[in-house]
Image (cartoon, rainbow, N blue to C red):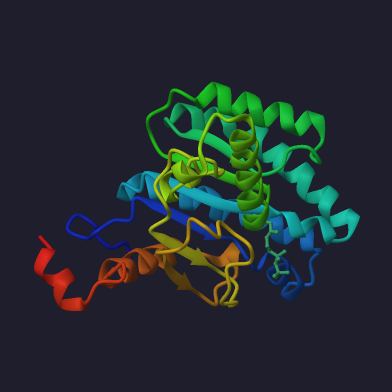
Length: 248
Ligand code: FPP
């Protein structure tokens, strides 16, 4: 069932924790890598659906700083898959006006992959369609620590004063600088946690969890998340009555 979103409040920025690839594969007696590969279909679908309903930014958690702790064989397979997927999808993404941006620590990634990531960013930089942020070797705590380090260096150099550091200034040091905070976080795979994803930026994000494993995440599941978001009242610390008074 495809729902119409013409009159529904659409999140500007959707973030997704794509969990459950391994279990999806194990339940089928397949290697975990098969689950990651199957998860690509859900990535494509999410990009297509975000574009169709008017989401402006989609941020997906492809690989966390903690994922380096997985068996080396799985890490290697994931890295090969990222490279392969990037090569296979870049033409279509570019032609659809998608602007690609990677966040996370590139220093541990293979030089070949880093080169492709930079090339994809360069090629799509001027695109005005969906901004697709791919979090690769990303950790929310590291993001905050690096922002703090940059500010400390600037204070030591005398280019800024400590009093100038407010929430807006701090946000501009983070990986998602220049982008709105996520309005909606979707996590598949049944766990109810944020797993070190975008810790600062998720402060007022609406969270939506589903038992569906990532490769099974369907257009209807995406629609359910968007509908649930539209039904939430975002109060940002105010009372319900205050928010209703100002709603248009
Ligand atoms: C979590 O499932 C998933 C990942 C660590 C990798 C996500 C990668 C993809 C969906 C592949 C394609 C992505 C891009 C951006 C090209 P899990 O392995 O933790 O699953 P489990 O909890 O069932 O073990």
